[in-house]
Image 1 (cartoon, rainbow, N blue to C red):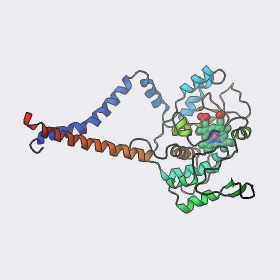
Image 2: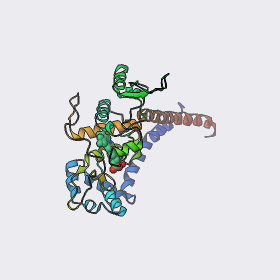
Image 3: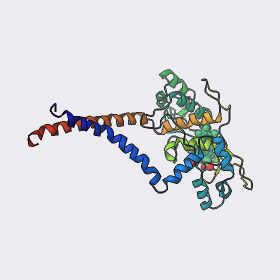
Image 4: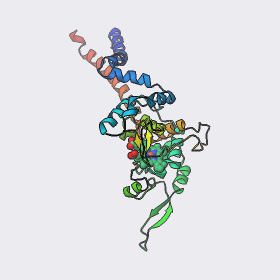
Amino acid sequence: MVRHPLSLTAMAVVLLAMPVVSHAAAGKQTPNAPGEETAVAADAASGTSPATSEAADADTPAAETAQGSTEHAEAAHGEYEMDHLNWSFNGIFGAYDRASLQRGFQIYKEVCSACHSMTRLSYRNLSALGYNDGEVKAIAASVTVSDGPNDEGEMFDRPGRPSDHFKSPFPNVQAAKAGNGGAYPPDLSLIAKARHGGADYIHAILTGYSEPPAGKELMSGQYWNRAMHGNIIAMPPPLTDGRVAYSDNSPQTLEQYSRDVSQFLTWAAEPHMEERKRIGIKAFLFMLVLTGVLFGVKKKIWADQH
Ligand code: HEC
């Protein structure tokens, strides 16, 4: 190996250059791919300011044609571009923001949990948000769960334990529908994975309410939401500025609330994301080193033949 310092250098250059080249190539391809160009343009147009995109949205044909037949609804849905936010968990080195997760859980607990279950979570899972054992116990104990039957065959109430699953607001789907004018508030455990756009989509729904455009009649229990498929949603706007009191200095605004609860719901749907990314990076580095070693060995074995 020492005899071939040049080829070793060349190999290192190739290995290091590979990701850079492929990255650049991917960047170049985007505008060439059919359909992609418009998506990029629309992205740029939608911008990051909710205020401007909302204003722009009010007059678009999408808003005009919504309601009515499914085709129209489809078209309306297709034309709305949700904002793509800069989440801390984006990218290969991305990680959740613990403080935001805790605030997001607070939003869920104080607002969303009145209608939405999250049955796949247990209170003990909350330790991943940075709560210590005592805090998790206290959170669990703040709800009353039905347990049993006891020796007398009776069900009984007791304070929640860390091993309990999140308490559901309704005993069954029918009761949930009956309590929400016939619409079912879906379980939020996996919603961030179940909906295209994930956190961006949840944020878009929560911030997407407005008065219906002129000429659109809403029935009672219906609300206009630019991010919802077909623009009509049966969920009353759950969040408004000042609705929840934060104990840190974060802004108590609809925008901040929406970001925090979207981050929390993303974690709930993908609690092992950070670990997955770490393993990916380690695997990549391992492959890199292995490639180098194998290349060196190959050189040595074939040295006589050259
Ligand atoms: C008053 C009850 C109520 C509250 C409180 C509530 N929701 Fe909803 N939510 C609903 C109902 C009902 C639906 C079903 C709407 C529909 O299908 O039109 C729904 C639907 C949703 C959807 C799915 C939209 C879709 O794509 O189908 C999301 C996401 C959601 N809610 C998130 C939240 C979050 C986050 C909170 C807390 C900030 C919250 N909700 C608070 C009743 C509620």
